[in-house]
Image 1: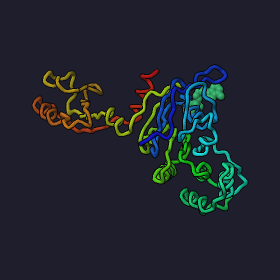
Image 2: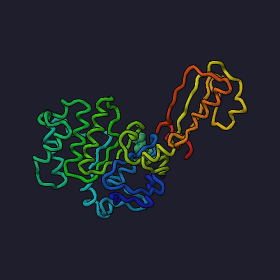
Image 3: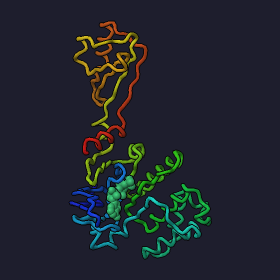
Image 4: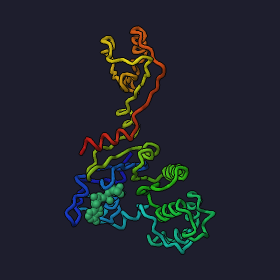
Amino acid sequence: MSSIISIQQLNKVYDSGFVALKDVNLEIKKGEIFALLGPNGAGKTTLISTICGIVNPSGGTITAGGHNVVTQYRAARNIIGLVPQEISTDSFETVEATVAFSRGLFGKPANPQYVEKILRQLSLWEKRNSKIMALSGGMKRRVMIAKALSHEPDILFLDEPTAGVDVDLRRDMWEMVRGLRENGATIILTTHYIEEAEEMADRIGVINKGQIVLVEEKDALMQKLGKRELTLQLQTPLTELPAELNGFALELAKDGHELVYRFDSQSEHTGIAELLKQLGQQGIDFKDLSTSQSSLEEIFVNLVRDSK
Ligand SMILES: Nc1ncnc2c1ncn2[C@@H]1O[C@H](COP(=O)(O)OP(=O)(O)OP(=O)(O)O)[C@@H](O)[C@H]1O
């Protein structure tokens, strides 16, 4: 897949002297869902804003669809839709008028069929004649997305799309974003919710203190870093591990009441069968056992900690 956004050696120093982005290099592939994860203040909004031409870079170059976002701002901005964090829209207007007006701002000729299509896609068609102020918070967010899509952009930025949205609505939004991708859009979303990145993204980028610390295919990331743990609750607590078990990646936990075995979830050979056999031979009985997989959340926390 070819890049639709190309960022090279991007730096941003705010007037206060604060360095918000440091030597960012990033390629966004056409048609992917890219999740940008990072703690508060990491530089996510600054990065999005520079790509959208709202914040001027201090150094480096960004192209969107081959257009330089600074020197060819209009051409670049025309192919970008931005859904900002805050809901900001004229609350006295109707849904349909708001979306049609946004389209006009980009100099696009009126196209009621297209507006209808996106309103239907976002389950807003029934509400087309409602005033924005009469909508629920979730519906208002959908209107923000409809506005961002009004000029038929190829790239859609969603800055914290589901912040403060309840779980059901969050799932609806995910469904909807996937639908947009199926229609050919490239989607870049920032999120605090690891679950959101885990659920949605094709690739994940982690940003911390203005630097991209990792970019990886989500599946590869989960595989590479995803270790599993098998926890055995022992019948009788152990004070130490018998020497016969030295070859296994084992640890005693909970004052010797639990035995924790770490293994690679992707490996064909987990070693569990041998472990259980050895435990039997040593007369170590267990009452119960459970397994868990390290989540993207743990991976993320470790990454951000390591890059401090
Ligand atoms: N106009 C500005 N002038 C000076 N510093 C700024 C300005 N805008 C943002 N910053 C600083 O740049 C850093 C990155 O901010 P940014 O909003 O990009 O982070 P973020 O990752 O989007 O955070 P959050 O998750 O909280 O939205 C922060 O420390 C912020 O205080």
